[in-house]
Image 1 (cartoon, helix red, strand yellow):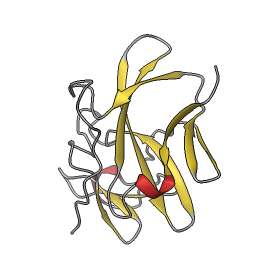
Image 2 (spheres, rainbow, N blue to C red):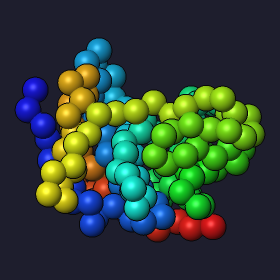
Image 3 (cartoon, rainbow, N blue to C red):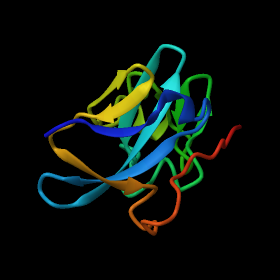
Length: 137
């Protein structure tokens, strides 16, 4: 599958996320978040490893502090670049990665198991803009 252009690196909030929806190879829809830090741009499936029905980005951008994504339900913090958690109820777990690449400031979906559907969450109307809020603590 050819890479799909998602967005530019500049459009990803410094302390937040860019939310989009994919269809996985087995047919189900999944939300994915793009996050950036000074040394990385990463894509993660939009759920906490402690409770997989708990979204990290509820449509307003993820909460971040000092390079970590904060679960809004129980406060576990995941490193934005590695996806690893070393505290709280999700300690020892890692976020599920989605393959992307960055070329000349543009982010592409390169994960063969995921087909880009639209910006925003699963429940978002296809005509609505995606999430790019700047939720901060």
